[in-house]
Image (cartoon, rainbow, N blue to C red):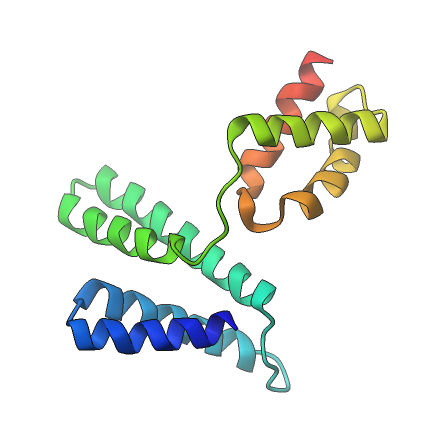
Length: 150
């Protein structure tokens, strides 16, 4: 399980005295535990659910780094990027632009969509295929681009 891998990697990072990795893995495990205990009852997360949590945390790091850069706080932005890099090791390989374009083109052909008004239909088909391998904003941008050209 992915959660167990995070725990064992945390132990290894503590032994290696890798401060950034320790802090990042602790934060990730805390986020997973929070997700498990949210709601009325405690429930163990599947690997896909843990990937979702890690994906959200990665996105937070990316957005924070951009905000820190905009505020002229480059040292904090670098820290956020380092944490993002650690989290990225646990995520599936992201889709390339060509792979994403091919998936979107196939979904457009499958749904028969021919205008941006039918974007929702295409997104319903593409999103399960993409999963955690591409950001939703990136997917919707590609769908809009291809539907606008149609």
